[in-house]
Each structure stands twice: as C-alpha cells, then as structure tokens.
Length: 488
Image (cartoon, rainbow, N blue to C red):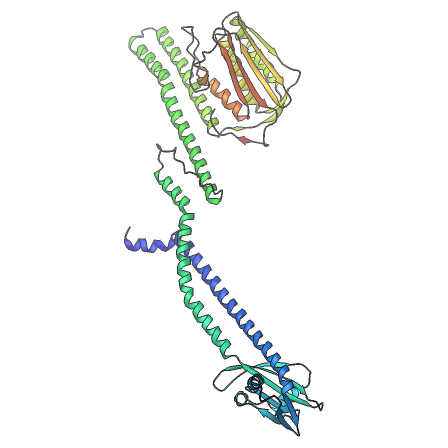
C-alpha cells in the first residue's frame, strides 16, 4: 500500500472519526457556553446599571427645585460628598416641563439627542419609568432612565438621567476576545484527550482484530481476557470468546470425525479388498466365489452401519439434529423394547425383567429415547454371560424420571469407566472372541441424555455387573423444536 493510499484511508479510521466527532461536539459546547456566559454577564451588568440609575433617580428628586421656571440644584456646597453626587447626577441628564421646554441639559445628553416635545408628552402619559439605550456621536452607548418628576407645587416635569455603558461593552468585548482566543487551546487539549480516550476505549477492539488475524486451525484456543468493566466492549469480547469456543468445538468434531472415519473404515475396507483378492486369485468353484461375496457383503453392511452412525452422531453433536420433545407415557415404548430383546436374552440363557409403573409421563423425543433404551438394554444382554440377569426399571420422583438398566455381566474396570462414552472405545473383554460392536452406542446414550438436560451415571464391579442410571427431567425447558449443541 502506497503512502497516499494510507493517507487517504487514515481519516476513515474509527479512532480518527471518533476523535473528530468529540472535537466538533466539544467545540459546539464551548461556543454555546461562551455565548451563554456573555449574555449572562451583559444582563448582570445592565441590571447593576439599572439599580444605580434607580438610586440616582430617587436622589435627583431631592436636589432639584424649580423656581419661576428655572432649575435650581439645591445642596450643601460645603459637603464634598454631596458635591460629588451632584456632579455624577448632572453628567447625563435632561429636565423639561410638561410642554417639552428644556429647563436643564448636560453636554453629554445633548450629544445623545434631545427628546422632542411629542416624545416627552408620550413618556409622561403613564406613571411608569421608561428605559432606553442611546448612542453618543462617538458611538458610546448610554442607558437612559426617564419619567415624570413632580415638584412641591404639584407640577409635572420630565426628567431623564443616564449612565454610560461603555465600560460594560468593553468588559464584554474583553471577555469575548479572551474566551475565544483561549478556546483553540482548550480544543487542542480536548482533541488530545479524545485521542487518548478513544485509543483506550478501542484497545479491546484492536486486540480482537489482532487476535482474529492470528487465528488458524492450530490456534483455536486463543482467548481475549475480559477487562472487568462489564460494558459493551466486554460483551463483545465475551461473544468473541464464545464464538471461538464453538469454532474450537466444531473443528475438534471435524478432526474427530476424520480420525474416526480413517480409523474405523480402514478395517472393513481392508477386509473387503482382501476377500475379493483371495476370491480373484484362488477361488475356483461357484461356492468359493459365493462365500467371498457373502463375506464381502457382511463387511459392506458393517461399513454402511459405521458411516450411518458416524454421520448421525456428528449431526447430533454439531447441533444439526433437532429434538421434538412431547409429553408421552414412557412405559409403552419400554415394554416394546424389552419384548424385542426377549428372544436374544432367551438365546443367551438370560433373565430379562422389567419393573415399570402403571404410567410415567415425561416430555422426551420418543425416537431418541427409544434409541437410548435400546442401546443400554442391548449392551446389557450382549455382555451378560449365560445364567445372568438383566433388570430394567423406571421410576418417577415427581420432577425427574430415572431409567435404570442393571446386569450381572462381566463388569467394567475402574480404569475404563472414564472413557466408555467416547466414540469407538471398547472395553477389552475376557472373552477372546466376543461379538464386535461399533463402539458408538454409549456415545449416543450420553448425547441423548445431555440433549434432554439429563445425566447418565454408571456403576460397575468387575465380575459382578454394571448399572446404568439415566436421569431425565419430566419437563423440558422451552417449547417446540429445539436444537441441541455440544458433544457428550
């Protein structure tokens, strides 16, 4: 990637966009705050001037006297304080009679423009003070307070006094200039803070991206540690780690399936090839060819059963096989299954007994439950020697159903108990020529129990027998079709 392409893509980075969004938002906020503070300051200063003018208005009435149509400022000339007050009052003022004839006027007020008789008569109609803002010839604003003044002779006069707002405006201009001059520094600091904060906030996302780039088929155990903040990023990290767990489980199932297929299919394929080669090179009569074909067909059937069972178990463990639980009486299918194994039990000189209640209602997938029961009962009948006994029991404790299959067979060694639910695991029997199974039956049993949110427990003693106990809840969580994930 060239440097121009990198420069073009740089503004599109999430960290840059978040930083600039934060900068724009903070700029708008600071600008709004500046104007609000300026307006508050202006209102406060004008309110102060109003209060001062109100006080001076009240003071002016005590100093003004009208004698023979002439204005006289009455005060103690020897008192410097009164002289100072009077000087301030006379700085900006206008006094007229009711007809608008000027009785007293300051030079500053003259520069503001003398009120016309019409304006004076209009201002004297309601008995309320009037406020206005005027500008002098040099552009200095003044606040004017005007109203009706009544002397001792009960005559009405028009009085207007004012104060300069120049200092106020200068203060506002200084505030505005200083505030917006310092604002770029604030924005620079906020941009740096936003850059650091967004970098820290996006660190888990960058870690997530880096981890995703490092993932391969040999490193599916990679996990991102939680930050402990319990926020959206932690939930993203948790979702990523859960996804990795599912991927790791799926890849493990694929590897297990490949291993199982390559291992278990090798024997029947080799046997079929060997029998066909023998028949091809040594068979001379139709009977010999027929025997080779029969043996090959038996191995083909075994090969087909292995493939079918492997595909079904892989679909179950990967969540592709769905359960359809529904409330039903478990006694009826168990009676049928026990009857199916009565003939093999009698051939093996075994006693197969069933202790079932009158009724036992539970929510199960009837196909999978029948497969579970058939696998356990079939194994018990297969590995129990002549003269032995197989007992099938079903009990209901109110919230769970306990399905138990106990036999008096050869038992399972303690060292083999942790592995009996693994695929293709077979306990080495004492009988040198036992009937071979696929080694997948107990894997199905474990998956079916887990898929129903139940458990399977086994107890065994060598030479005394084995007992399998499957515990299933009577009511399944959720309604309708349910996908089941996870291997047994």
